[in-house]
Length: 249
Image (cartoon, rainbow, N blue to C red):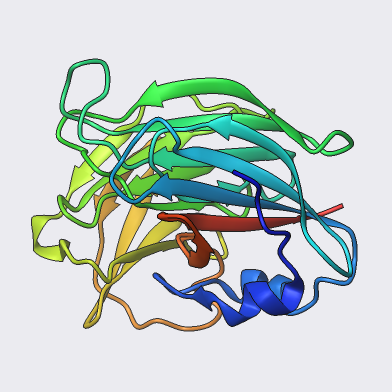
């Protein structure tokens, strides 16, 4: 199947938000004149081996597909704040025959507009169908959440952006909600979990675990990196992009 080239106007006219986008992402989406790479997580309507991540070259004009790689249910993706690394939360119910989702890290070849997988790691047991992801502004932690089970997996990251495969889980069943989003405080010291009626603060302890703190009031200063789970609707057979991210070159 041939893909219809995307233009900035066509993309923005078909974009709807599935979760609050950070101000950084909104600003980038509003100015696509410079050279950029766009990453889209494509999920087939009924689930199949056609799930994938696509990489587009973005200039002032049509978007051109440069690369595509298989990836199971890439419902949420996020870029490292300083390194050419892309993280993908796979919204699956089973990984390696156990009830849990998984996460991948991809190295980005910016010159070739290609991805190479660095790792593919499991979440903790019962952390199924993960569909929210966020990274700390300092690039030292990644959090992955499920809106159905309200289990949050905190992954430490190494200096090269690689996942350290020892996630720390925290289950908050009272927060299970399709409108849940995750973000980090500007200080990178805590994860903020936002629902329709509250904001919970999950403190990072000893650099590796989450501990529930007191509910707080949301502010622009505190929510600096929200989930990248935006929805890009495209009239291409029965497929759609479930997640999206942009990288300045």
